[in-house]
Amino acid sequence: MKHIFVTGGVVSSLGKGLTSAAIGMILERRGLKVSMQKLDPYINVDPGTMSPYQHGEVYVLDDGSETDLDLGHYERYTTARLNRCSNYTTGKIYSEVIARERRGDYLGSTVQVIPHITDAIKDAIRNGVAPGADVAITEIGGTVGDIESLPFIEAIRQFALELPASEVMFVHLTLLPYLRASGEMKTKPTQQSVGKLREIGIQPDVLICRTEQAMTDDMARKISLFCNVRRDAVIEERDVEFSIYEVPTMLVKAGLDHIIARRLGLPPDGETDLGDWNRMIEDLRRTSESCEIAVVGKYTQLHDAYKSIYESLAHAGIANGCKVKIRKVRAEDYAEQGAALIEGCNALLIPGGFGERGVEGKIKAIQHARENQLPFFGICLGMQCATIEFARNVLGLAGANTEELDPRSPHPVIHLMADQANVHEKGGTMRLGACDCNLVPGTLAQRLYKASAIRERHRHRFEYNNAYRARFEAAGLVTSGTNPQRDLVEIVELRNHPFFIGVQFHPEFKSKPLRPHPVFDGFVAAALAHARGTTKTGKAKRSRA
Ligand code: GLN
Image 1 (cartoon, rainbow, N blue to C red):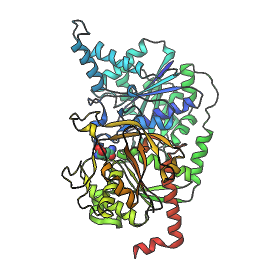
Image 2: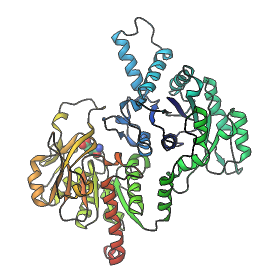
Image 3: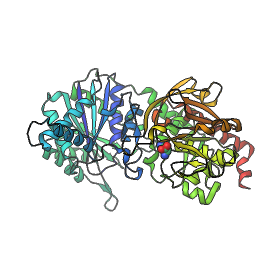
């Protein structure tokens, strides 16, 4: 059992999560079993209560944990099984230590950062190791030198001290900034961030240098000398030109696989098999077809807010042999400017969300998709908006709404789940994680999944109101998936439409590059068919007229 710790220096957003996931993937492709974990230095107990503006998307696991979006990279790139022990924050560590102190477990001692907090962090690292794993990869969020990350960096130093040197290694991600004015790349920030690590007592074994331009051999030698890292372990990770899927390939080309294998004494010392992965990238590079999908949402300015959705669309593009262009449209803008904003798009996706802002725009966009045979996919709040739109504009139920936005609506077609009525705390109290869903034979959902029962991940408090179900069904908004334990409606779809489906769950958390999610797959296929049809019939021109 070996450990790899991944830290980051100079700036945040270096793609540490992606790089950690790529390392996991590389090791799996060498026949090893990996486990993946992220330690986040912020004080929130989990990111569930944070705004997407602060933190990007909240990634939900099967067991209902609300976690950092880097865990999405781990699941997409590796087969590691993640659970509540796969993501710890300062808040979670401190809550555990303080609860122990209140129970009297510390028997009169003064509770301190060292050793009590660092011990709790080391326990967390051990808890995160999946049974049978050969290598456990633990990524430390934040940047070395931050006040919050100190206890974590100190804890991994102690962790390494307690094990034989051949069982633990440190990978440090850093930035080589390019100064346009002087036309050169600078190594000083890297030297300083490694200095910070060495101050605590950690000597990195590998430096992965994020760069815009090629790192020259001279520069690598200089970094090697000043940072005390062997030349071959100073690795360039250039900004990818084409797709983030190139990162594992790039790291293998740079020899990272052999460096890790040698450093940790990992058998076998053969080649890393990325054959199917590289073929996938080549196929994607060669595709000439494309379709464009409008994502009308609240946080469209921020790529990370709907990260897994964008990824899932890309995976489905790979499966359909087409490039998927995404047009990000602010729902509030749609409310004002209407369908002109999505003109020329081949499909509409409405993501999940909370709160009032933008909802009327989403509903208006769905009406356009429904009336114009534009492929539509609604996720969570997107499904709820589709239900509201149908209630108002097809069933004629004026004022139909979700109780979340209008508690006094005459037609609460989406209402609070019964078990949520007495919930007052916000953190970790929604309907969370994987739940069963039975699919109705003969529906689009059942055709897409090619199964009669599925499990998908949830994160919501409100649900479809069964009191309106008969009326919806009679008018053509069919229920195609229900939760067998609680008879909750999980999927709705339109009968007379090329592709119109809304799901209460989050399918985007279960899609992988080489195994796209069936609903995304079908959705992109429908968008592609629309794109082909549009060019053939000149429909795009007509709609502009
Ligand atoms: N706000 C809605 C609810 O709580 C939808 C949640 C979501 O889209 N994740 O039910």
